[in-house]
Image (tube, rainbow over all chains, first blue to last red):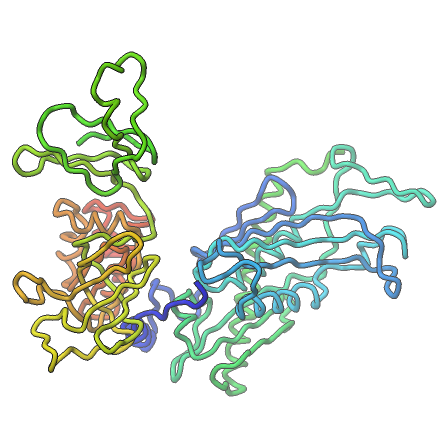
Length: 281
Length: 249
């Protein structure tokens, strides 16, 4: 299936009529998110994030590699986000759709370019050995707003992950297995999360659009914010033009939402930490 | 009603009585012969084709007309496979000179002839736009062939409720729920109708359309039907009544 079939016209009529009354099809308020669930895997660095029926599984793995010559102190963070037909039949494997390119770029901007992970802390021996982190995102189910879900899953996995402890004696590097010495968490500067708003003509914007809402909207706006009230990325790719005060309005809402989301993520991480034995000594 | 779980390829134990047996969806005659166990190789079943299940589900049976017995496999799936006489909800996706192409959610598009409507003649044909939702009946469904749908009863020439659906909202749900909604014993629709007046069209292709007086009532109906489908809300009267109260508030 290359192109998705348009929803019947009654859907659009109903959706707009409902939004005019500030009602959404799943009973949410216009600026309410779906319930976020984190499911932590057995391994450290494996987190599944669910946003309603949308689900993304994130997995972090680490290997040791040689750094680039011009940046001998920096480790690597590679984000692998390929959307396969498992998420929805409109995605083909091997051929990136426009949505996929958009999601990949925004994830790159929101997680890697915002320096969420301290890459200099990944250095083991300057110019010789650094940690190479790989964040793999598996898109399990698409029921709208894959990007926000992927960003949450990715950041949760990075904060959940712990790399094995290494010891440097002269030129020799000893990697201690997790049984021997407790693995150490990554140095995370901040937790940027994405928020997507959908716009309709002459109606107020809605947060976290479901699939139908996203297909019928006139444009979307994605904000990447952190709990420190900083705008990391603002992406508005096409769609209806927006006035400056409209953007400021959603940014104000977004700042509050992201703070709640980061708090919820930290609570969930804390809850998971209490159930597992990481510290050996 | 028996409750045997069958797997695809499993031989179905049919009663050996002489009355006629009707095989329904999910059951087919296998091209290979029954591999009977050595103990009953004397029976005649070794020469007849095996009757096997073609999908996972519970083997169900019912008494039909004239002492016949009907068998089918009741399972849950999400992808619709057209079958003759099924009532379905489709979206018009293209117009042709003599008909329309309709998306039923199945692997192939279906075709709808412009004359397959109540009172349609060559001079006056209905004019449906792309994106219109229609309630139709599958008139032809073969493997390897494009299915055909019609919006009238060919025996009476009347619409019988088929045709274009205006307003309202369409939702998608599992195929099993659609079949359950059509059984008179299923308590969901009578309970909903007691508190909210609405029109409904249930398609066997996993789509349900309904239209209530207000937006909030329609949203409530959608949330309850989807909740029952996910298993979040029980289909019993008390659960549904509680959900209506919560969602309408």
